[in-house]
Image 1: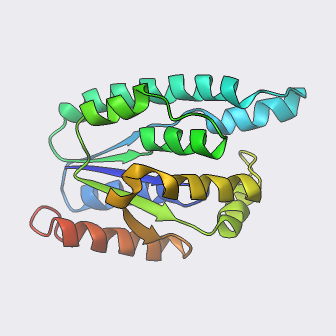
Image 2: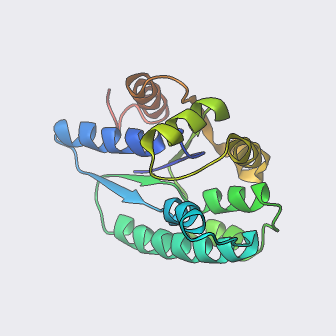
Amino acid sequence: MLIVLTGIDGSGKTTAARALVDSARAEGRSALLLSNHAARRRMSLLPERFGWTVPPRALDVIETGVRLFNVLVNHARARRFDGLVVMDRHLHCQLALREANGLARGTLLPWLLEKLPAADLHVHFDTDPTVAHARVMARGTDQETEADLRAFRDAYRSLPEYENFVEVDANGEPGNVLAQLNRVISAAYPARLPN
């Protein structure tokens, strides 16, 4: 079973992904966590550290390359794994980033989304940008503005694929968000993932 989690930075998707996999393993089930990051944390800190201004198009080329590599490698790993696979982020994240930055959607990523195995369940962590920004600042590992997070959230919602996402309210504490995630999974696949 393949579950994909998406959401803006600070939505708690990585925390929930880890907890979901740990919970499945504790119940004796096979579970694998795969991260499809795009090096955004590093890319958000480097320009500030060195005083660079990186154009959105250049950032997109780097981030798309890193994310695309991770997605392809992780789909190959998922294909060989028998059990629950949780993917933290996917190509939709890059499409939303492009939209948020006023860049064209392009043809490669949408084409790949059609060709790669579809997720059994795609869960989107919807978070108020103010809450997400506070979380990003608290972790202190990257830089995001509230305005950028708001644009990112709006961009996700504008994706044509968004209507197929199952949305959870990710504004609460991690335990509450994980409980919502488990309810969504159980509702979609009660026989495969008992609560």
